[in-house]
Length: 158
Image (tube, rainbow, N blue to C red; front, side, top):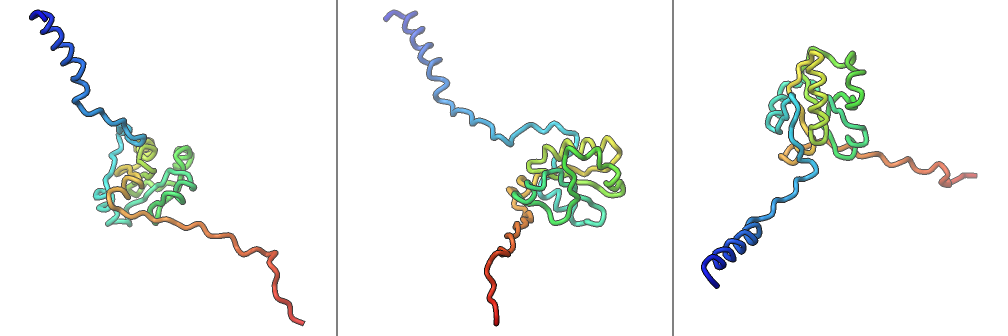
């Protein structure tokens, strides 16, 4: 092989194998979306610090009730689904610092932005799944079993 061909073959080989040596990029997880909200995304430590003063704090959980029961939440909160925030403004006190809650904080971030635009003091948004993954404990409420069937025979006395 002459010199120009050898150089060309070496260059092509280097180009064709260069992508093999680098580890393939892992696809992003479904819950890894860029944070695009003005509301601050709170870590577990930041929320725990706010929870030290519950008298001035109000958690607003913007998830559906089935999400709260399935994934857990915080022991005390106001439940207002994300789609109903604007219609529920009259029932949200302005005298408290608000933290909005959802599973991964994205709906909570959007709700926080809306509330802040309406004059509410929003400390941030938190995701219960994020909080739990960072070592925090969420409350899970066991769904009660239905009562024993009324059709069950009862002993009779004569």
